[in-house]
Image 1 (cartoon, helix red, strand yellow):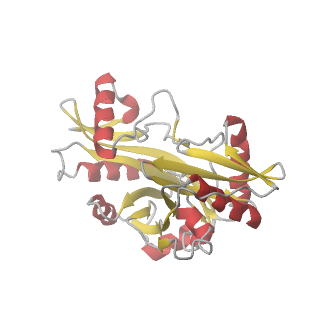
Image 2 (image 1 turned 90 degrees about the vertical axis):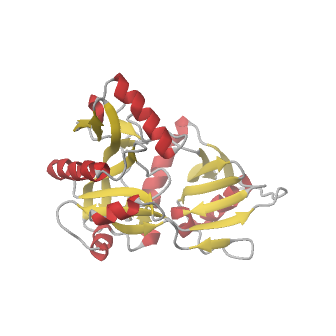
Image 3 (image 1 turned 45 degrees about the vertical axis):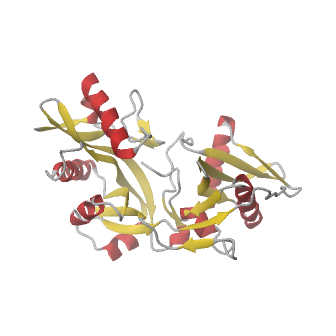
Length: 316
């Protein structure tokens, strides 16, 4: 049994990896190492290895993807690593494979200067206990509000506003809106240079011809979800929510994470039901020293949830 870098996969291992990723995460291949690219989901892959895998007799047993990113903290911008795509082949569980890979990733990233390791997971799965045993702590919940938007729901933009699907020429405006709206915040504020949306439909709001907000909308069957939305001023924020509601007409509409916190005062009334906690969580551990949950939250600035940037497109 040996540990192999994802960048060193041959054709056979790449094929096995595609199957393992699909069987572990469903229809998405976003956690797979993207051949010929140096980034995944908009974030830079760890340039020298991309992730690690456990191999035995030419068979892929377990794998982890790794990217490197910068995070704004109360003490300045810090280097972190993002863990994703932790998957183990069916029938190969309970052998400590993922633990061994995580331990090696921590060693490599510590030597590379990463101060913290971050990952997304669910409290409802066994892996959450594994992460806790390795020093990870929950630092951020993903609350949500839900309503059923009537099919005949209709809302027209105010005379000063325009609304439409964002196209590639609009992406620089999205980056500016994100930068302006999250100025002074902690969290995922320094998005990578050249960052572009990777998931969902992106809508751009303009006020008097000037881009003033955007929302990322994901449609799945009978539901519409918004996990990323930002606006540069209060009037645009209100208009943005009303447009998102209109996009969800005839379906269940979910407002979660950062948008939930931005619009929490507006997500009231009998048509909405909300929950401040959820199974989904962002976890972190310090690679330099042992830190309690309280110390991690303070160090990373995650205690002020209204000013901690963590949105749908900040995934890895």
